[in-house]
Image (tube, rainbow, N blue to C red; front, top):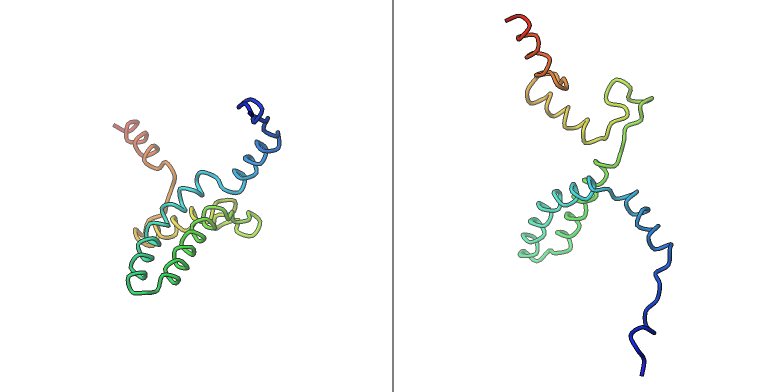
Length: 123
């Protein structure tokens, strides 16, 4: 009879190194974006499956996930887009452009901190 100890083996050292490679291509931010984008894709899949077109639903679901992954992965090159968001992720630039279109205001980071300091100094 074989004992349990004879079936145990050491894990190879390369196994843990591969985990670092996966996190290089799929970060937590990417995973969260894919999960959020998969919710409407999953809803469309169930709707289209009810109409008898599950393959189209899967395709739309995959496209939503791929778009979310690409938006959180692509960084605009600073030398090409120096004045329009170079060096930032594509989703940040798009959110700022949408914010600008909706509110017709310029986005300035930490503007409320500077305005409250000036009001305190004047008052």
